[in-house]
Image (cartoon, rainbow, N blue to C red; front, side):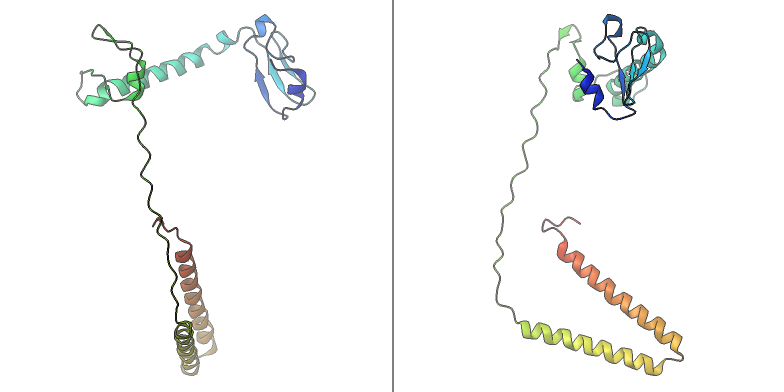
Length: 193
């Protein structure tokens, strides 16, 4: 199944575990009862007794899966100690049931998936003529007031260090305001953050 050219293009460090090594293997690089590393660094494990080597691992995994299923099927659904009640609404539990109280419950047909959400109407936004002059005038007034306040603070400041720190503070406020406005413009129209 896995030819030599396929192994040749695998990345260095790749590992192939051949479970059919006892019968010759599914990989051309498999060597019976050996761990073989190819020229390009692919490791091929060809143990014929892989089941006995992983007995405790496979038992632990199987027991863990069974315990999770039993806990999801019974006591955790009723919250009553000592009571075992199958949760017929749980898809995993219902799909594994074959018989229940003497009645055949398999094969089970899972419920139909929920319908897709209804499509929202797309509302086309009609652009209107805006008064650009008023917008620019308001912006110019705000900039003028800010410049006048900065000059006033500079005149009244007790030392140059205060002026430097205050101007840095004001600039960070302006940048924060612009970033907030830009992120508000980029926010999706569906109202998500």
